[in-house]
Image (tube, rainbow, N blue to C red):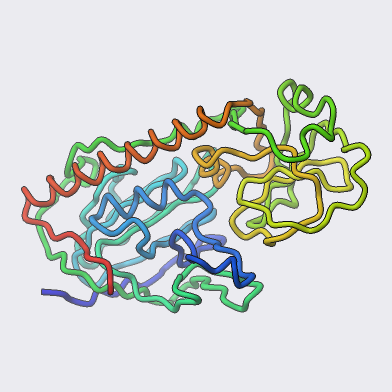
Length: 333
């Protein structure tokens, strides 16, 4: 039996939006895919509550976010280390958590990373643009949440007892990334203009870069040593994938994110591996990065292992929910 649950937002954080894994097949029409900056955390949050991987969730960037549900719900909070409280009690991140009707949920004091992800068992109702709830402010689709607004969820999940919120409901093989203090290592592979930029590989491998304050959802701007290509002339504008590392005319590097423009004329000297891109979704201003060059086959192995971890978690959640008599959320047709 499905029911409608309403979450009333009491605090909205600095920037909280509806989010999912992005638009499919939109780039051929000139629209970026968009989607969660930290795709891994958004995916795991949905898996933990029995949702499809690409279900809508809430992306929270900074400040305090809190809400009160009008019925019992099952939620999961992933992403950066942060304080997560239910009815004043500390609750664990990266695990399914039951919230009773009327209990205030608060997510605050994020450290190290910059984004938290909130998933609710069921299907969050939200406007969609080209099949996705992912925001795109340039297209007039902001999806920003404000104090006093309500989030509605269609769910088959019903009440069950969980009196001690600091105790996990299940012990699951959750692949939790190490979002630590200090310097982060980013795996990269060669880009098309590498050969035209002699010494850039060695320079990037031996240098440290700092995420600048002008970074945004389009890309991370990195302060650090740069070499410019020689003899390339004007580069014909071409398509650019997520994770491309460009050298603009200024002395900086730009790592393009999921809201990048789809074509560019700047030289691309490297690509961040797909498995490493989610980590960059947690990199805020001042974060220090170093680059680790890997072969293409190593990058593929890392991605396949990440996919294996998610498949193992999905199987474990399905088995645990079945044993406990909890429903899984079926994707809408």
